[in-house]
Length: 294
Image (cartoon, rainbow, N blue to C red; front, side):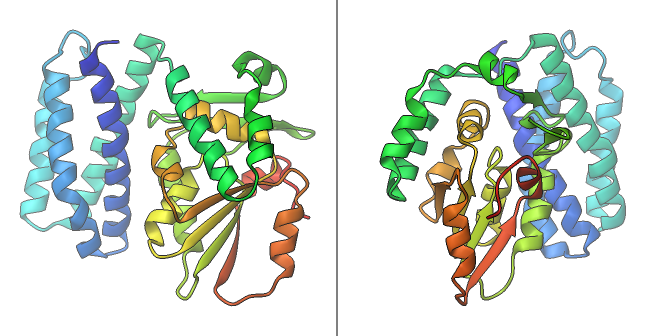
């Protein structure tokens, strides 16, 4: 994969997140919030379109005329302050284009989502995060074993690329496999879930289920003053997240703490303590996949 294609792939992930959030706020008629995203959307959109047009041979299935028409339509809707149409164009045309390009790149490049250097870097940060919660010994034991994706696949864990370019994870249960995140737009799903959790007066969010971390990071963005403590009972999920999900921003956030809780005892202790300013949030796919509630 060339550096240009790799950069385009990453830009598309960032652009799709911004587009989905802008569309959400336009639909909600919260125009000030939606318009805050548009300058960056416009900038990244231009970079993406320039990249596609500049490599016509690679993206031969994408029509230059359709790109120009889409861009003109978005600009005109913005100028005329037609936010209903603008949201439609962003969702139905731009968002669809980005997903199609991501899937094209994944297929053409046989995209390698696992990076050993990223895994080792994120493992170190994860161990430090767990050590901050008084779990240094448990963390070192959990991460000292060599990471073997094939062995984890045989054990019933399955990672898959999503339409947006991030990874989702499926976990085998006695009822069949359960996906922890959307196969389509993982960040959009995480944003909507986290938004349903946010409430005034909450100082600490206690989240059951780490998954690939998407909902945790979105919660941190939506509740910038609150502390977040995440409980995960499956150590293999923490390792898979380090291997296949970009966790740097999450692991560097001082407001986020992580608790490895294989028996569910720490979660139970928190539930039993009635304190003001705390909110309990269940990531239901994690719970369904086997995270013990009590």
